[in-house]
Length: 481
Image 1 (tube, rainbow, N blue to C red):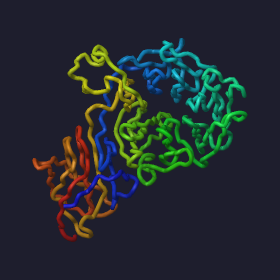
Image 2: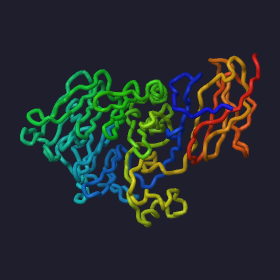
Image 3: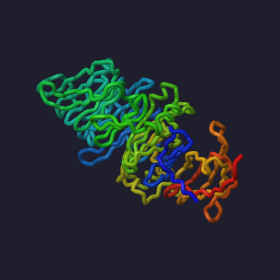
Image 4: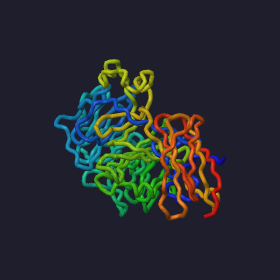
């Protein structure tokens, strides 16, 4: 009885003799298999309009604040309530504009191309206000400088503040505030990543930005030419590694070179599944969930009406992929706030109906968690009961040139409610037919009597399970036809 392991997702490779999976949906790559992806449980009230950004910041005094923005407002989370903390008069973003956030000391900085840089000093301010008379799409911190990129009417400009003074952008050799235009045919800046050095992504190149002191302040080196970032929202980073979506697929950039991570695995699938509506594509959102060792991109599929309805998930430790179905507006890497019993009751007065256990550290604010704004403009975390995970194996002619008869399939999955289907056909190029779903008997085995020359297996798992390892297959030879 052969055992078929649930290996990595290789949806871009032909089904026949595929050594991996054709589908691994609503799950997370895990050691020796997959684990479930919990559904999103919302825990806040709704903001006014479609979410354009979500960010969590920790101050120098260990105070945690969570902020968000939409087309006209900036918000700060107070338990389960999004408080409007916009400057007087609010904001007016363009249809495709987004908010970007960073923290400099105790100042949360927000940027968008239609508004002056905004700041909120934790522990002091009650509303955001203008930090400087400067508009920029992107903002980050490099060393002791606040750095902006894609300034108003300057799509190839990087401009930075005075040393350790994020309010001063007056060009000066004394304060070291200055700017650099990265001119060339590499297109507009698509994003910037900070840290000890900066990484500037353009449409067709990547530049490294290294502090060298006066008179130049920063040195800019083109470390990659020919391709860059496809969309701004497709860039994220963790530690020294930046992950991004290029026009031909997914990459990891280590500061010196890009490493393809989706080639011959998921790139072709992704672009075939991606919506062709440009205004939807601009909403792609990416973040990192270190607790699960994954990078997550949310994107609009060909079925989307504007929301981000799919996730593509990369485990950077295992170098493996999966997908998921969602209905969200933006991803964020947030830290849960602490709640009083009264604030919990504000979420749902019927405390028995709240699915997040009161023993969970979610309520105490002691863990960073993957978060998202859902289509109802509320914020949630991935703590709900798992949905339906689906695994489809590659196709094999198990008995060579003979037709085989599948007699049984035993899923090697601990937990959940399982069903199994057999996909079958007698020649390559023919349509795939699937049997009806069969539930396991008391011994955990699903019984069939399905003939076919080319066979694949599908297992659906509803609800929580510990780990999906694979399946055992019992086949017999039917004979030549």
